[in-house]
Image (cartoon, rainbow, N blue to C red; front, side):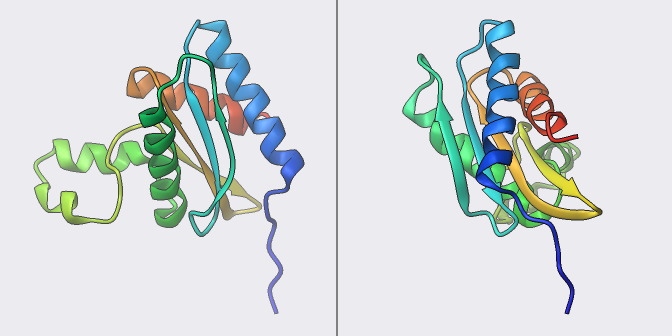
Length: 132
């Protein structure tokens, strides 16, 4: 039987702290969602000033990245390239969700919402980089 790595609560706290630090450095108020490889919420942090909608969007971005093992930017690019059928996929095709890869395996994802989509991804990447 294969064993695989998985996210711990400590990992979630590291990711959140690094993502929050990146957001604060830029004076951005965001919601940070961390999900497991099946798209189930493990940890959520809504910074002061982030809206309730940001929480929902961050979770959906993270879920999309986790279950597809791809960044949500990839889905956004496909739609922007004319593949409108992608809008029927069970994903949120908006940049800001990144899968977390450990030992060649997707162990979960981070979804961010609250600022411009490319900034959301910048924050997600900073969080994931804290695990390395």
